[in-house]
Amino acid sequence: MLYSLATLEQDKLKAIQALEKEIGTPVVALESIDADAVKLGDDRLKKLRNLEEELGVVLVAVKAQ
Image 1 (cartoon, rainbow, N blue to C red):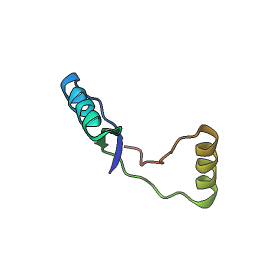
Image 2 (cartoon, rainbow, N blue to C red):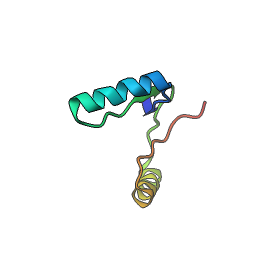
Image 3 (tube, rainbow, N blue to C red):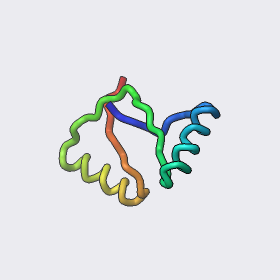
Image 4 (cartoon, rainbow, N blue to C red):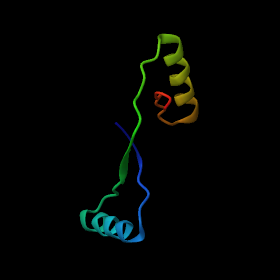
C-alpha cells in the first residue's frame, strides 16, 4: 500500500486547519493508493536514487497494472 497527498473537500480542509490551529503544528493529509512497489536490481535502484537526489523527491517504482 502506498500513500499520496489527499484531495480534500472544503469541509474536510477546514476541519484539518482547525486541528492544526488547536494543536499548534501543521498536519498532512494522506490517502492510500492501490499500487505495489517492486524490487529493483542494484543498477536500476542506483538510477532511481540518483534521480531522487537530483530532484529532491522520493520515488517509488511500482508494478504496472
